[in-house]
Length: 308
Image (tube, rainbow, N blue to C red):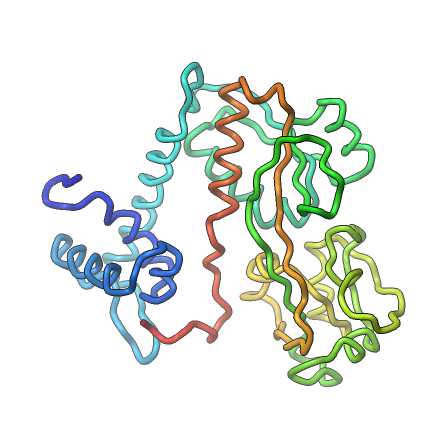
């Protein structure tokens, strides 16, 4: 569809290009070929009469006008998504409901914050209440005192036959930039021979099924505290990549290559059968899934790929 000469489908492409600042990454995220994305960028430049992105060395940077476009563009697309996700009998703009989610602090950091930001724009009276991932709160979900349970697929017996995949998480090994005991890579044995830190949620952590080397006990900390602790100690840790993306720009951390791959984790949301007929619950699940599949765009300083 065109509006004043602009192909509105190109607005989604424009948002991704302005965020990624890289043709190859943008094409992967949009599931389009690189020539198609390059063609869309050419059309967008012609319409706005501005380069939008300019190459400086190996990187692409937003122009001043590109910077000015990004925020109103994102706000517009959020409103469009809210409109497209609406269900009969449910008005997101006026709904006054509370949605209770049992989830870890990791999920709160990498998912629920973005969800609440989206709701503040399209459903300002909808509230999200996060219940910590404890046996007691899992019990509350079981008796339908909570609306959703977010946990890894296969790591806990499903409490409901209804579940959706949110995203697949990769794990990376980290150490402080000042930790000279750790080289650029580690084997399983070397990893377990070092002081390390991990979360109290063993079902969320991959190293219980990773490798066969003997292991000493690790310091247990909440997810969000692990990058901070590692950056100030001689400990190492395996952390979810999305969690690291939140803290990496501001902490002295480096990634360590592991010679044995760490299994990835598929995060799912479970809900109750009764929610199948409630437009509000259906809409909230759509929002969760949409936010979950929105790839993190934070890049490590100096680690951006060369422009495509």
